[in-house]
Amino acid sequence: MGPETDRKKLTIVIPVYNEKDTVQKIVESVESVPLDNLEKEIIIVDDCSDDGTAELLKKDSETGRFRVEYHPVNRGKGAALQTGFSLAAGDIILVQDADLEYDPREYPKLLKPILDGRADVVYGSRFAGSEEKRVLFFWHSVGNKLLTLLSNMFTNLNLTDMETGYKVFRREIIKTIQIEENRFGFEPEITAKIAKQKCRIFEVGISYSGRTYAEGKKINWKDGISALICIFKYNLFR
Image (tube, rainbow, N blue to C red):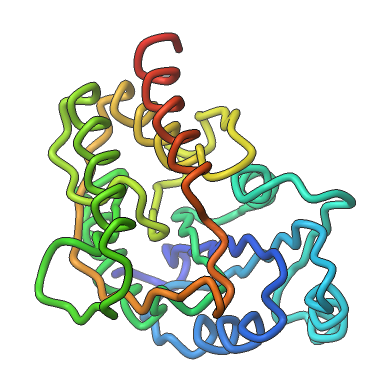
């Protein structure tokens, strides 16, 4: 990619809420991904976990392997990402959930369109490509596809998975966007805003190992209603 002085930095922002069973595993997975000529910066934002996650992070962060910020009250995924983005020093910024549904080994394919200079934003699609997916909830997949369809109607994009947790941004893009949504409304909000900026957006197919509610899945039908409202809000009134 060029001399050492041209080495780029990748910031991985990990929003965390009550993930004591998986947060150490996801950090280890992120750290183990080989990325040639990319320096990694890991920023974890604990959104006031009350299950022991924060205590684990405090202990592990003493090694200096990653940075942790703690919210004093629970504010939601969007708020955690706002904090993480504000601290990110990377040329490229990637969102990584802490629940093991998304596999960090797929970073190379997510990063390639940006590193090649072809993309400003990359979405990892759970509904595109031939990668393996865990078979789970029918109505969740229907809801995701309907929200994506409605979002596409306003943005004039042809995304297959607007709600995906894997989103990657060039620094210059995400640093100029003010995120307003504190919860899962982040997904339709950021999609509307990058569409209005005429960003070069790519999708790549990813694997997906979804969780059941017994395993800790947090998003529910109320978040679906909120996403619906956000599609109208950020496409028509912002």
